[in-house]
Length: 575
Image (cartoon, rainbow, N blue to C red; front, side):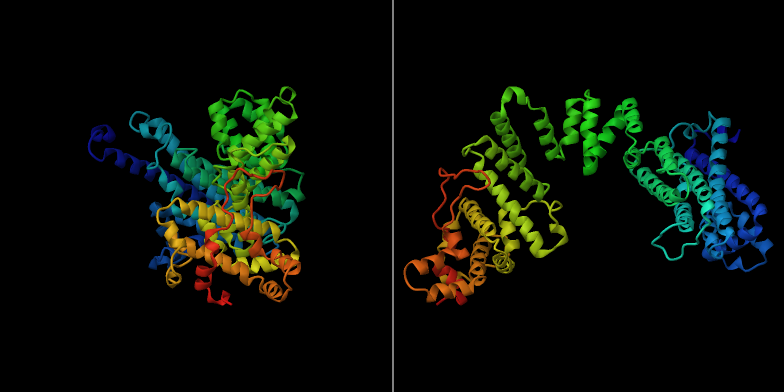
């Protein structure tokens, strides 16, 4: 035949694909024509709408001429699908016709796709030697017209129409309600359409687990699950069985896990995990990703203990808290004893807290676990104690900053931990209000202690840079040069002084009491009530079970609180 003659010539393969596409389009158009004979009134409106949307000036002729014009152009036959999807919306709400219209629209779209797929299979079978690209997995260039934007748009619109037509509550105001007895019919019709859509997507996109296929599959399954959930109260009790079947057929591990979890179907999920190591890996990743399903992860470890260590480490790498819990669970408590076990828990929590960079709240939790474990073990200070205390301090201040700034990026648990200097800059401007609020609540002590530790952390880091001493000792005339928000050593020093000034301004009434208090015990008592005084004289103290770290070298007074440059920078502080 002609294909044998041109085989091997440049452009032969694209020509074969275009010929196959033409055959598929003709078959799809013929199926539409057959359905047109069943419901000519529906197709008359849809064809007129499709021609109008295409901007065709010839859409005005008589209906017979419009049909001739439309069906003679099979290269654009998919334009009919969005128009068919609009048809049920034109019917009066609350009528039986809505049910029939939705099911008919589903059958039109499903028949269109099925005709093209059947023709593709026939060509592949009859011309096996000439069209090897039609056999096996499709490439992205083959049959991509089946997933072209007009078809995807039409199928998406049709799924939305199915949901609008379902009885029950809805966020949409234009829901054509169905009689309750019709819900199952619509769901089954929608499931048939979803299956043909997924077959067409698999044929067109080829890679069943590719990003595009996964996204499209999720949209389709989510719509079907929603439809089944709406229909379930008016039919036999169930939890998306049709969506579950499609998820299994098209290997959507995430959907299978979600649906089995919603149904509480442990046995079905365990059966899948036992039969496929790859599914087991994906399912366990889902268990870890969704906190509510993490008990299933530990159950799976108990049932399938042959998971390779490297694979288990890859699964746990984003979830250090789960790794810590697993290590705690596996400790030989009988041989270790309570104290030694608590010490090991403390060490493993410290190993997680110090490098944690993904979540501020997670870092705080690990630091708290260290303190609890140390208390349980009656442990003294160790070489990691200072670093853990610093971690806990920064985590608490980040949470406080989140509440003060009320910014989306600072939601506790969602924000990534920041460095001490960046945290200092973010706190500047809100410390004054925070102290006033916490003072009224009688809860400022921890916040003040954390600010004192933050100041010393920043100064300790700053001391490692060259020229830092000169910045602290700079003359008052240079104090207005640096911007506290500036990412530089000078900016850090200015931010420290801004922090100190806010601490003073937050308690002006207490400062007045100090000035008017009699010399001696009363004035000393007033001084010790100041947050400024507490921060200046702060030392690492025993809290949350952590003993005093006497061996840690902490300067008695922070350098940034030197009064002459501080008052020069903020003249309101001068007497």
